[in-house]
Image (cartoon, rainbow, N blue to C red; front, top):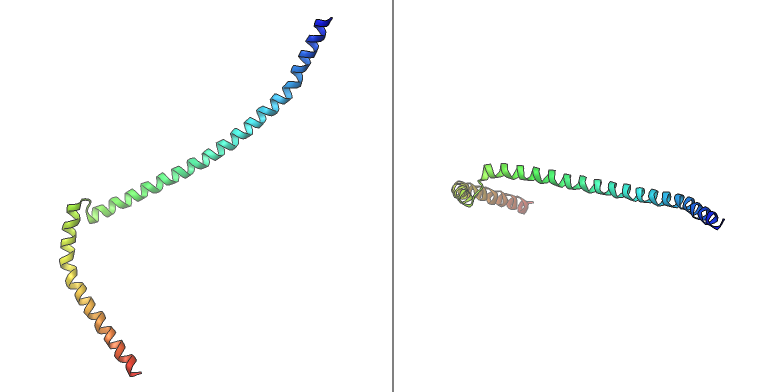
Length: 110
């Protein structure tokens, strides 16, 4: 008889534990779902940064095609541009100075 009573109490105790286990499992599922959503958002951010980096590298490759991609190429380009632009810059400076002189003379007349 005692054995039957003990088994009844133990088996009944197992029945009370099932709803608690279910609640714990549900809480764990909710936590994991939230963690999954957070990780998916981080993944999207990383993929966006990768895409931007790819676009930046592509743009830099285009600049390198135009301006050269080595120190030697830059020096050659600067020497070439320097000779052409020096005369242009001097002429532009003379025109700006002349325009400023004309404006100052006009303002003094007023």
